[in-house]
Image (cartoon, rainbow, N blue to C red; front, side):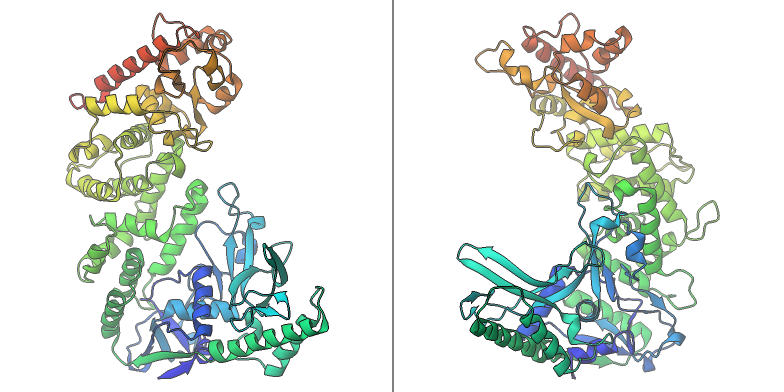
Length: 633
């Protein structure tokens, strides 16, 4: 069966909806723009499969297609939410709509067409320094076509043009102070390129039906006439011809694009099987998306079921992002699905996920997901465990950039889930801190290592459960423990990294991990407030007496961890002068925790002896405390 893109889009949220088994909409603005580029060029984009629900039992959950899409994870400001923008599909009651079809293949393409033709998307542009809750860093964008871009016209009587079709999402003025829609001139080496960005939603009504041709043509003519550019009469007429050609191509090739489709009439259980085979045989979704689809299809998933995976996932992300804003970009559907799969001792490997069966692994995941917590919160145990994981790392100042991997939180979440009596206390915070430092030096917490550690959490668990996170046991169980060779290599190779950004304490090639393990008192401090300091400042390198090897100012023997405020106060002060300006007790504290060698005053003349003796003391202390024969209690 062949229907046009206009036919399909006009049915969305009117007669055609999504079933609960479908994964979430995940395409970004570039993918959507590329889809429209394929439409206008007549490229194949794949088939749509519709489920005729007249032949199905009344046991399906129905969701709407998204019109205004929030692209990305993390918090969303109220002004964006007030515009009815969504990141997730909204569930609707079957009795409230006239539903003829549910889309079981082609959701990404149809929802992309819907957003492009009838909606918009909202994007965050504040980077790591901005706040996702601040509306100033958000833009509402609509899909636009360059009316002056056609492969048939390289120029307009001498005016430079793009020479090809162009689709882009451009910011409106609803959030940004200025609109990016309309005329644009770009200066190039060989002259100016003229563009006219026209929203594609102007071609259709709100319901996706094509608007009157004469109305749209008149609007386009007015836009060409009002262009603020220096152009002759012939050039202006040439621009009209280019724009009219692009408009015609859009109507014929985009709105009139014949989208191949098939309609199936099967029972609900058969549709589950069809969906799985479509996704495994064709362009497979990401493992976490497929897992969530399996969870949504596992019965019961009816309107009467109080647990809806999509909505619960959305709730988890919103709650955890509000509670732990430093991790909001890490609290994603993929991360939460990984936490869930860890509970059944599996991981998000494509081959593993594809082998899941609804009678075994998926049922086990669902049962663990819906478990209540000890406070009576329905379906709350899973979220509580993850929340405690984030609390644990947050309480010692760890953030995404100062951790070897977010998989640490997934491991902690499993630990708290399987050991509900364990508390977020000093013992667990110190255990997590030491685990991070050791993992950094061992280059542990790769995907396969974390998966094995998740399995070990269950295998090593005593009958009455753990009270403290068994980080050392997890490393030892995989033969990942510090040896004398590890210590020697780490200390000899650790160097300050000038390329690391401010605050990246734990990315200084193992420097912070070594210094932190030397003195566990650092676990009482906020790691994010610690910074790596040169005991002898970099500025004094030229004043230090040197041998033939030169002064290695960045070696670990010349580095210490300081509170960032104290580091700024110290500045380029030489160590003797800095220490003499402190109180006696404070100066002794810094000498002790940073392993200053005894009997060697930190003067310019003693630099080489000072750093060599300090590095030897570091090796001795680390080997004594952490080498294979001395595993921590």
